[in-house]
Image (cartoon, rainbow, N blue to C red; front, side):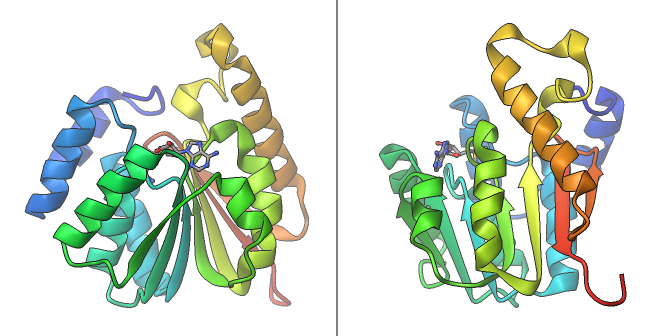
Length: 218
Ligand SMILES: C[S@@+](CC[C@H](N)C(=O)[O-])C[C@H]1O[C@@H](n2cnc3c(N)ncnc32)[C@H](O)[C@@H]1O
């Protein structure tokens, strides 16, 4: 459990919304057995809710792992026409591609094997939603670069921004994670103080940051 909420709350929320899809349930079990970090159940539900409201057509995901989150988003939201998902590790990208084709979503989800930042540098597509879930120490770099790829009304969602509570509380910080924690703290402070954006940190799962550009009405 990631130290953000009480265990009994998380357990309750997870039981309340069991994974209905058999393939996603198998993938979730695989991730648990093989220590692959995938999105927390309550974060998955929350983001799927946001997607059902925003109805994005095009999504960019940084950090595919075994394809769990992109499959969950695409299966549950018919608005989605395309997800470009970027994964650094070859073996992960291969497992994700197999999971995606097993479920018949290969026309919608494309896995790009690349470092996320390198991928962004050359990218000139525009997206309705950008989901940042790759190297936590690089979020500010990803965010700054990904802004050019965000449609005017688009949303950026970053997962794991509270990083097992360490970002909020010094006594939880493990020494070998200190650089990541410092970078995440700086990132959250910078975004929160930036007048160009409306943002919110939601303390569910491992902490989710939501950001969108301000418009004339804000
Ligand atoms: C938290 S997991 C992604 C989980 C996935 N979004 C899900 O919820 O099903 C993070 C993934 O980012 C990948 N990753 C780490 N550093 C990366 C980088 N520099 N560029 C692209 N992917 C990276 C890791 O290999 C890992 O598979």
